[in-house]
Image 1 (cartoon, rainbow, N blue to C red):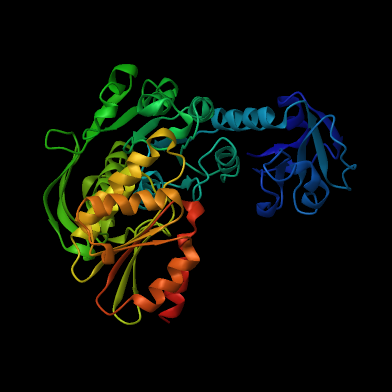
Image 2 (image 1 turned 60 degrees about the vertical axis):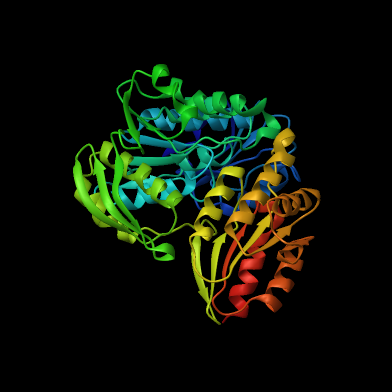
Length: 458
């Protein structure tokens, strides 16, 4: 985004108060993240209305997008207010306009698991060839993602957008803004089912992006995910499938080195090359293959992709391997949790040597399937670990019931009420040679447990 305030006002049918010549080069909905020359978008939040922060925001931001009927002080010299009926709608208008007007390509990544990791992998795999931008962290919603798009430098050639949703209609809105040239699906799973009519509702919500994909673009599908089988019939784009022996992109001769990573042969439409991925687990191999398939579609040769594989790193709290003092290994996957992601993480733990400890927090937003999902997770844990710590309330108790039903003994299973209790228990319990998987929904706060263990081990 690079526009004068008066041009912004005309575009969103707004009224302007202040300096019309102010130049705006980015946008932000969070006043704590504002940069110079940003447009602050004042929106109502769960805890406070953004209009409360307009005066403070204009100490940094060049302008603010506000509701016409809001009581906001006049802007200081060299600052501007753009008044509209609906700041959220105007914000989305601006993002859609910026997408259309700039000569870049947009690669969108969606799915239920692995989105952020695949996005980060793709950025690493292609940044030697292109000037790239990517949505930061988990800013993948209708609130955070437009700000990321609007704040990209003018020289950006490819913007990698992680597109997430928790309710129907959100990906349709993001699709209207992004108009992707490449659309990649990771794996669809029963996540956020509290807000949908079962898995079919999740699938249909994920499919909302298909109608916005450039017909001359590329649709990348996970060949091992049956929930995506129908997607190819909903798009005119070039279809590329990854995973599985018959897919366009696949891994051959795969050899696991446990927590040290994976070796194999990467087979892409552009050819084959040997690779080493310094990240453990079949799920990370799948994330790598997805990103490699997208890189290939964007014009990066298989040899370049394979050579960069050794540089890939797990995002914070998304499967990082931490070796702490005392010979203890922590698999930090504490950012979030879903049934599919927990299953993948437990598969990795099961392949590890040493005493295997699973610290599993509750999985949120599962609705009617929550009890069954937690019971199944407990049963899977019984097959993967020597000791299980279940963290949280009633759902954590169901998780322990599943483990006991699957054959774990009572002295192998512990239920703890919260992350602080888990920290205390683990600090006194761990010993040299232990491998500890820590995973749970964000609200459980197991990232605090990881931080405390790391600090203890310094």
